[in-house]
Image (cartoon, rainbow, N blue to C red):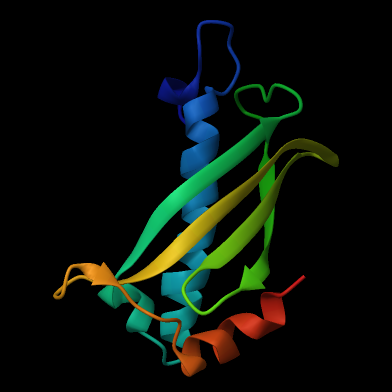
Length: 124
């Protein structure tokens, strides 16, 4: 956490939660995927929806942990679910709808079989 992540009340700002969820998603779809030899997510994936439930404030300096899993893998979208823990307590839950995207063609694309195979262990 950075000092700039705080709101006027000394809690982690609500927008920062979204950034933390993004960092967890990137760790899976880019870092872990690349380590497994998969780079197709780097060719394009866009976000079509975020949902966040804030359950309790998180104070500056508190260590947080994010657990994530895939709620569903459809032909044209992925739904990532998350829980953000402050210590042992859940502070927030979220969902993100991701759409694989062909950046060159400027349009959505289908989930590739190799992407589905890579993400399947995270189906919850």
